[in-house]
Image 1: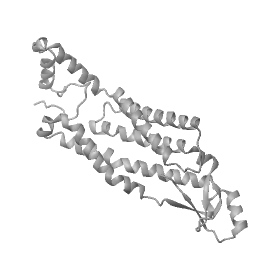
Image 2 (image 1 turned 90 degrees about the vertical axis):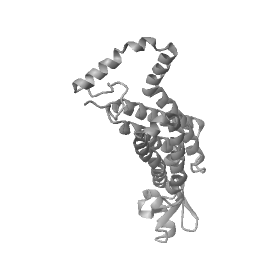
Image 3 (image 1 turned 120 degrees about the horizontal axis):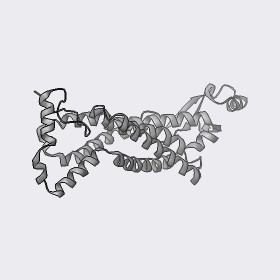
Image 4 (image 1 turned 180 degrees about the vertical axis):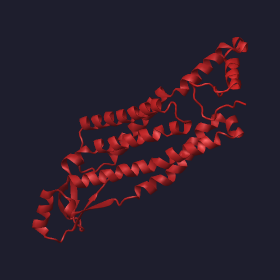
Length: 265
């Protein structure tokens, strides 16, 4: 006997088309004469629902909102000793938002034939890709000009681009880790919950429930991800740029095996 597929695809028949019964149900459904009696308002609602399931405008809008917020957060949590111009902020914003949108829309198109669960992981891929662009772009001055490094007693030793790269890389990893549970585990939870009859009766609450659960994840993951790496980051003298390393050794000899710097958030 044919069964309704658990994986929903708006562009595919609801029943198994490899069986006669499945094909019969499909054609009985699309030739049902009762549809003539359906009010126009109901047809409009059904059309809006179908268009909503294709998600591209919604993906574009919410990724734009998310990356706009992320750009602001990244700007306020940069190393304040490295100024950034309005033009650089604009370029960083457009680049990061573009990366998020390209990833989200591209993966949505690529995963049309994939399982619903895989499709639900698309936003995480977009967020991860955008973080890899947004944070370095918003803090590009640190990479270009370096950030201040000090000895163990906070005495300034110079500016290092390699220190900036290490600090920014750790921040990117922290941000991706911060988002991971809510955007990877939550879709699995929702997919399983939505199979229960009581969840199918309260679809209007699915959105608020996901927001609540995501907030619960973030309540723990924000401090946990920020704590992954020390705020006062260190770098071995041997890993610094040759010029800076030679300058430090000329002044301090081998008394400064490590330099320290603020990696930002």
